[in-house]
Every structure is written in structure tokens, then in C-alpha cells.
Length: 227
Image (cartoon, rainbow, N blue to C red; front, side, top):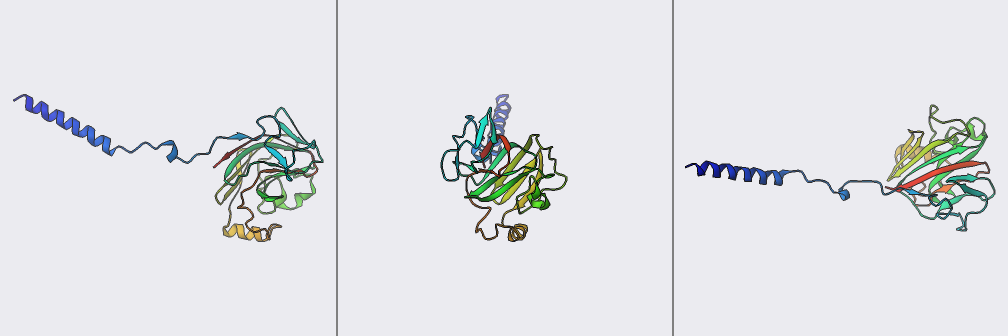
């Protein structure tokens, strides 16, 4: 008579345990969770082994790198990554010379591409056009007036996110540009830009480009991860 209740308890525990196993939410695997792939330091070897000129030739003496700091001292034109990117996140640091102008282009074909503008807003003549000022999506969308830019000669932290149709520019921890490629807003600004005749502009896969605009400019800690 005492065995029957004990047997019932044991059977009940077994059933509850079995039910819990069947109804427990599955733990998502690494493959189930969207994530950025490992970051690559584009100057990780303290050289230009991941870069070329636009014509595919090795980077010349107009660009130098010392202790991870890239300096454009002049005369060698734009340089591009050997790899192509479309959906990615690029973090970097930059500083510009007095009255200087430069930029980082992405989703490029040749010299054409979306551009994170780098400028001395106070003294460069291009400051009269709002979408040509620092941090802007060049000739398309101006960065806000209250952007957290630092003084000329000081390092700024930049970030570009290009994922699908979403384009973002960040400066010193604050998002300053956000636009959807192909949206109504995009169509308006693109139609007024110098790029309006470039079919597919902004959606291409292409190298990342550091611009030689004849002014001294410095870059460091360029880290890219594919999305």
C-alpha cells in the first residue's frame, strides 16, 4: 500500500521533467544571431600592404605610416583598399591641417563613392556649402551644426556604417548622419548632387578610399568589419 503513492510521485516527476525539456525555449546558436565579423585593422602591419593606388600600383612616397599613424604629405593621390566592401562598419580616427580638406570614400567605383567629409570648417573655402563640411555625407546630406567636432589638429573619432540601404556617419560618439539609400529623401538629395548621373551610386560594392586633396591629413586605427 505504501509503494503505490511513491510510484505515482516518481512517475509525476518524470513527466514534469520530460515536459520541461520539450517546452523549454531553444538556446540560440552563434549562427542564429546576427553579428559583425571580426574587425580587421587596415594598417595592422604598420604598412600599406592592404592598400594600392587607384591604378593598382603600390602606394608611393606621398603617404607615410609611422607607429600606426598614416600621414598624407602630398603628391601621391588617392589610395584604396585591395578588398571591396559593401555592408560594413568602419571605425577610425582623423585629424586635419589648418584650412585642410580630405575624406574617406566608400562603396566606390574609381574616384566616385559616398564620402565622409573631412574639413577645417572654419578656414577652408568649401565651408560655404553645408554638405561639404566635416562629417557630412559629401554633397548629399549636411552634418548638423551642433556636431561634436574637435579643434583643428586634434584627433576626432569617426565611424561609418553601411548596411543594406542604411547609411550612417558618426563623430566622437554621436550619430550625425542617417539616411536610407533609395528612399524619397535620398532621391531628393541625390537628384541635386554632382553624382546624379552615376547609376547605382551609393549602392555599389567597392574599395574604401583615403582622399588626397593636396592638404596634410592624418588617420589612425582604421578598423573594418563586414556586416
